[in-house]
Amino acid sequence: MNRGSVALVSAVALALAALLATGAVLVYAKNANERGFFGGPPVDVFSGIKPQVNANLTSKLANLFRLRLLQERIKLAKALGPRVEVSEEYREKVLKIATEDTDVSKLLEDGYNITGIKPVIKAYVEADGSVSLRADESLVILRKENSIAVVLVNLKEERVTKIAVYSFSVSVIEK
Image 1 (tube, one colour):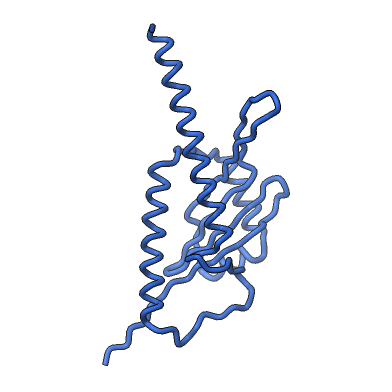
Image 2 (tube, rainbow, N blue to C red):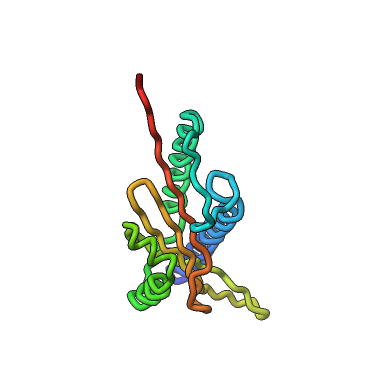
């Protein structure tokens, strides 16, 4: 086998591994979105649901433990997944759509900061067997102290389709 053949086989194997890793991350993200955060139902940002004031300490500690596990899963997914570079034009388009949404504007006014833009990459297989990758949706990550907000932006429709806000706090009263 000559060097050209080895390089071609290596490139094909690497591309296949990247495609499989991307698929695994997308399936995980879709399942996490369907089951909601911490396994509960997905919560809309402005649905009027108020956090429990008298939640016991054990449930709060359990939620913190689950948050830590989620952070470890995210680190693992980042380590396994392919590295994706986002162009400045793509970033500007996503930010323009997100910041023009009234609910996202309220979050930004409330003190949230945009910390990341993650394209949702989907692989499409054509009738002739050719494969193409598209990023028609993107996640915008907003953070504020003990809260994280995730905004799903649809680039085809040029609108925000979902917003999820996750908030974490623990109060300990020692006597």
